[in-house]
Length: 390
Ligand code: COA
Image: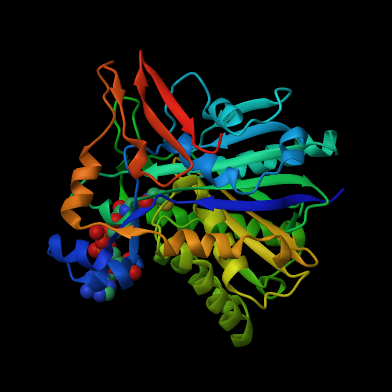
């Protein structure tokens, strides 16, 4: 049975900061951020967006009434969940009016969560071929003002509808994965900001890539020339390139050029959004599919997922006939075009304006947020959500 991505949507908040201007304020050469790290703009979430609303906004644009009837599983991958007990999937299920006869859960393994969700969805559909699974990868990447990780923050979500006979990409069954207990990036339950050993994390990302790539090649007999492109989890856009470069000498100059050119296209959206953790790999896939207009149908795309802590996986998909007709290129262009730049001072203010954690109630002005789905406040410890389309 062919199972894979039937639809893929994306959402990022309407505010961003320019990395050149952030560099100037931090007394750093702008080229460090734009070339050394590879980021141009960083999405800034207003207080009225959280991981639930980002995901719901991403899914809202792709689901029609039939999908909402047929979805029987919502799997929400995140590492910026809003509750230790209740899953973010349940909130999204309600906000999108998905039929009640569905399972809704949240999965966690740092940036790997959405990949785990996809693999779970594949297994579910293999048993129940008529079902559709909504997979969400949604996060707000927060390291803190003036920290080493600050330039690699961001916010956004990717929503994917996984089904049999998918219109965009069939996911192949052979996949190579690896787990090792390491402390390269983590967020203790008492902290709203992540801790990261940046250099170690970079090293491990590459080491994991090399190991799963070797294993994938042994399992499949495939090599670099069998790929039109390889998309990477992108905490920042230079990261995947560092991993790709370590294997490029395995192939011809022509293939090297193709993979490097396509890598660049696959990083365009991420370069303008920043890190969105669980959704980053899929934002990169979306960037490639939507911006590289001549990617041949039937071609194989590699996907490297990495979630600190750590789990890595290399898998692949085959582009389906007429896949471009099932993308939302114009809508995503509009989303980027409609964004508003904020100054560094405004970003700092927004960053520090967080929801209360002392149990008090708050009512938020959602009029300033153009998103359809927003957090409107907290009442008696319960986050309140509004879908303006209802
Ligand atoms: N022009 C061009 N490049 C420049 C430059 C300039 N003026 N100044 C510095 N650079 C380059 C450096 O050479 C380096 O490139 P390299 O990595 O290819 O060697 C890059 O910019 C970053 O510089 P570095 O000094 O290493 O930056 P840093 O100490 O501030 O750390 C990160 C950068 C990415 C490690 C840090 O932001 C971080 O920890 N981010 C979080 C990482 C993460 O998300 N990990 C988890 C998931 S995988």
